[in-house]
Structure formats: structure tokens, C-alpha cells
Image (cartoon, rainbow, N blue to C red):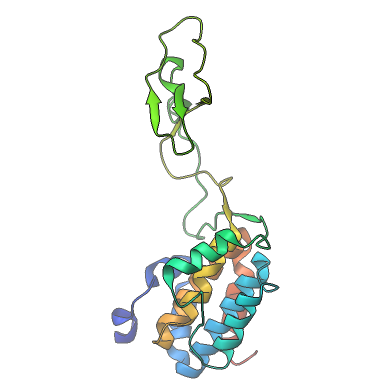
Length: 222
């Protein structure tokens, strides 16, 4: 059963529990000092895996965490931090497959014929004009396709019923940044759980490597 601390703590306790409930309890029992160390480990590993450690503002944030100081700009502002990630040309274009908890088998397509199918041709082609799709024209009737307006492009809509497939790829830098932010939480238990959960998402299919390190630190082997 979860301790009172686990019942009260914020963050994604349930998400990490799905991957390894024993790690959640181990982090809870480790105490504040080890929890901070686990949070720093998870944040550092996530940033390393995503290729972010060469960025000066990421390196400064990791140093601040190691020294027990608050994160400096831009990580002290939830809006600016994502803008910084998007605008920094040094951020690598890395993707990772979705991490799937061991008690949840990877998504299997349904036997239904309509489980993963494109919309009919009369419904799938849209005219989208402008950089933000400011205007959308109705689809053309069946038959010869009508010419597209100047500057317009056609898009295909695909509908999937059920969970995303295991082939779904996500941006590793965007998965790693919450580990850094989570590790800075004032509550050491929340910091550890949040950073580890975000690092699991950053590792994707290889998340067990991260959880093994967290285990080793909780047991005093790191």
C-alpha cells in the first residue's frame, strides 16, 4: 500500500507506478537526500539522452540542481523555457518511440476493418490556405479534382481507433525538458518521481536502463 507521503505528493505517481511500482516505493523510502540525488540523476540522463547537455542554459540548469540552487532563466519561466527550446538551433532533432509499461502490451490493430483507415476520398482532401490554415474550403465533389487555390496545399486526414501504435515517435528534447523542471520541485519526493517519469518517456523503449540506475541509487549502489 502507498505511504501517506505517496498519497499526498503531487506529480505523476500513477504514471511511474505503471512502469515499476517497486521503484516508486523505493524512492519514497529513500529519504530526501537520496530523492534529490535520484531527481538529479534522472534529469541529467534525460538531457544526455536527448543531446541537450552541450547547450549552455541546460548545463547551467544541471549545475544549479547539483548545487541546490533554483533554476535560472529561461527555466524559471514556464512560457520562456519552451520558447527557448523551440528557438535554439542547437537543439538536436531526435525522436524516440513511446515507452510502453510492461503490464500493458503494445497496441495491436483491431480485427475490425475500420480500425485504421483513411477517410473516404470525398472527406479527406481539404483546402487549407495561409500559414495558420486561416481559411478552409469545403471538399470537392467526387470526380475530377478541382484545381487548388494559389498558395493552398491538400492534406489527408487519417483516423485511428484505439491507442497510438508502438511506431509513434516523439521529440526527445521535448520529453527531456520536464525531467529538468521536475527535478527542481521544492518537495524532494515529487522532484524524484517527476524527473524519473519524464526520463522514462525520454528513454522510450529503453526506459529500463534508467529505472535500473534509479534502483541502484536508492539501494546505495551508485
